[in-house]
Length: 77
Image (cartoon, rainbow, N blue to C red; front, side):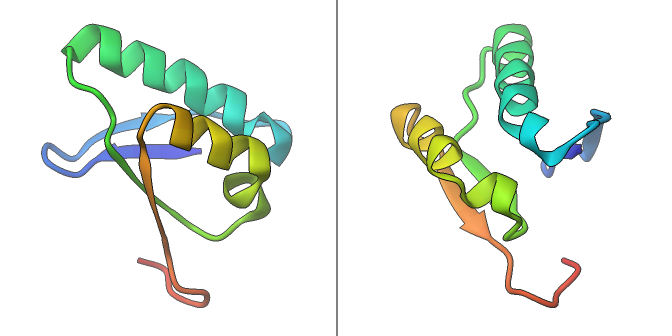
């Protein structure tokens, strides 16, 4: 899993054994980044993989006010 902060192009990499680990990995990443920077995550750009469109992921984003922008299928951007 790759996290990129678009303003600075800072990159974090997380290795997953299964896609089901995506939500827990994102929760840990969110905590790490927000505690170190005092800036809250407001928006995510995601592909339309099932790990990012699940009810659990949607509920987590809604709970913390994180807007999700999903990519169009078939595009690499």
